[in-house]
Structure formats: structure tokens, C-alpha cells
Image 1 (tube, one colour):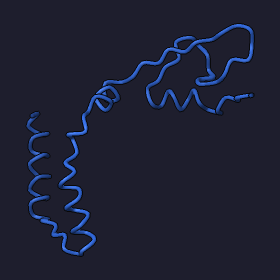
Image 2 (cartoon, helix red, strand yellow; image 1 turned 90 degrees about the vertical axis):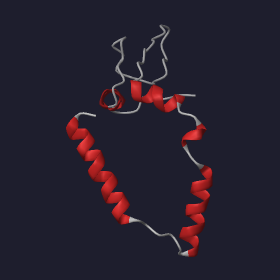
Image 3 (tube, one colour; image 1 turned 90 degrees about the horizontal axis):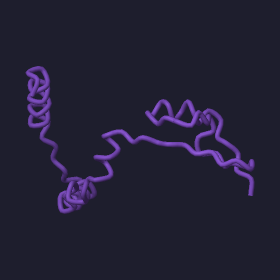
Image 4 (spheres, helix red, strand yellow; image 1 turned 180 degrees about the horizontal axis):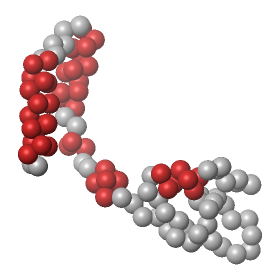
Length: 97
């Protein structure tokens, strides 16, 4: 089996904050030579948090209720409550909270 490197993989990896510490520009490429090359990857804090999030972050009862309301055409969206929440978030950001 012959695996070819993805063109531009190094620049794509750089865009996502993944660094190759070995200097190998062929990130993820299979080594076909006699010498073995290795790549070290450092994950960002955001990816670590994403991996550690639990399933309890999603309230499935609410998801099911919203799906049913959408399917029935009975979903009511409280735009005033959404707007108030956005304004409060903006105020918190501006206040440094």
C-alpha cells in the first residue's frame, strides 16, 4: 500500500496551530524510507476542553422537544429574550466579565 502526502498538509496544520517539531513537512505522510520520521503534535486548550466535555452538556429532552415542535410547526421563538441575552452578553464583554 502506498500512501502519498496530502498537498499543503503542513500549511493546513499550521493554520490550525499544529506544529511539526521534527521539521518534516509531510505531516501525516507514511515513511517509505529505511529511516523512521516522527512528528510531535501539540493540542490547543480548546481541543482539550472539547474532548473533556461530557454528554451532559446537551439536554436531550430539550432537543427532542424542539424537534417535535419544529415538526409540528408549533415552535415559538422568543426574539425579545434572544435580543436581551445578546445585549447582556455584549455588556459583560465590554465590562470585562
